[in-house]
Length: 46
Image (cartoon, rainbow, N blue to C red; front, side, top):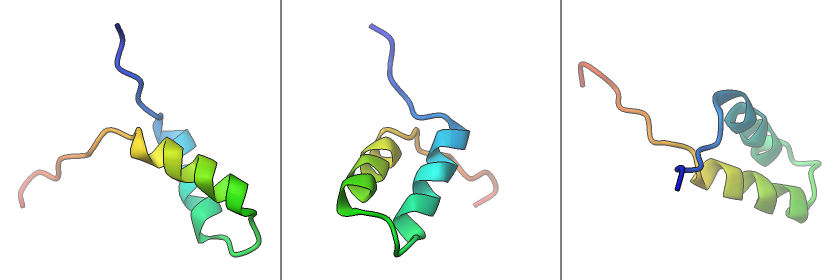
């Protein structure tokens, strides 16, 4: 079974939804769900 991961563009859009105070609670729930499926990035050099 393939691992489901949110893409970079979708994660960026989800982040904007969470930071926008005008979005509904339902939108923020969906955005949070999308970000929770985002693969963790590893920062090199730290």
